[in-house]
Image 1 (cartoon, rainbow, N blue to C red):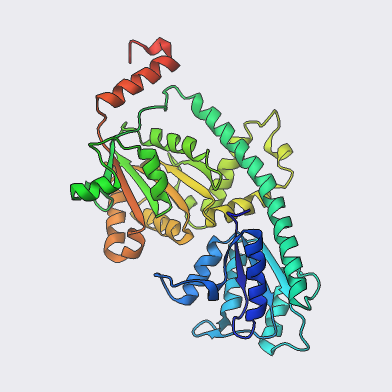
Image 2: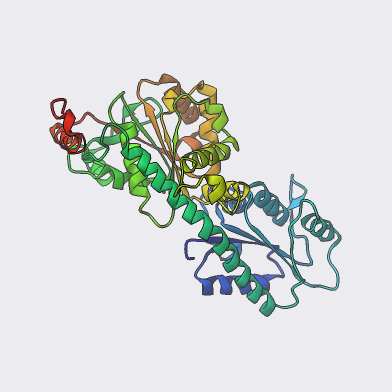
Length: 410
């Protein structure tokens, strides 16, 4: 359970003991968490933005309903706690609510409690909590139960998705087990040019002259920011994407999802449309049969639950979105800008491919560099270089081994 992250939400001042109880229990369970008073300094944004961003990446949101409403954020007329709750609802996070028993509550807090407990749109909170010992016990039981239900079923289904996708890849005509060394370089994604980096700096990042396992490099860099892989037609962008899918599938902390952007309307992938397209890809792949059963027979947890879990995993950075071929999608420059903005807002793990010939993409990135640099700098660009003799020899060997009838072509 160590990879799961829990967000604790409540006013801080006057309720340190309750929040400390949560921290001790989460430490005991070996879980990651965000409890604001125990966090260090953050380089980005205000305290409000930091907290809301942390809500986006949590796996479970815990709301403690105490007697006070909390500090009201200027300009929003809401407490930070209520803003965090609204964000968790909007992001469809699993929410655990605990109402701490008091003789009375502030009037504004009574209104918030009524909103949380609303029979139609609210959250079930169970019994009132009288003391920290009871909260500790309930919190541990509820988190373990919630995660077992979610992870057990969704992990099995994701593993089956990966198996089915790998079968599909293995049926492609050309092999994709090729030598991946020494054919990438850092690129300026605003205009498609290689960056002017000194040899020393280049060797610290990635070198095109020495052996370099580009998939391992990509794997390391993705956690620092989204990756954009570019190259001319036929240079192996889709090959690298499939190889990355294969490599990422061996990880135990996140799962890959492969989305082919060819001939799709990119606007359908903007905003919450991305969640829908991920769900469609997931169901379409699984519907090709898992052990002779269609997804409707297999997914006993239900499609809505799967959709919610996929959404949660995207925003919690538990899914790597491999988006292949934005240059073949139906889009214009403004749509690309909106799409990149949305990926940045979601703070998700992304590997995106594009042809160097596709001018609208680089125009869009140039616009972001000039006017929204905070978004632009979160993307790292890689360029596939021309294959050398070693790559061609490795590719030919793989082709012959897999398709002996193509020996003359190789």
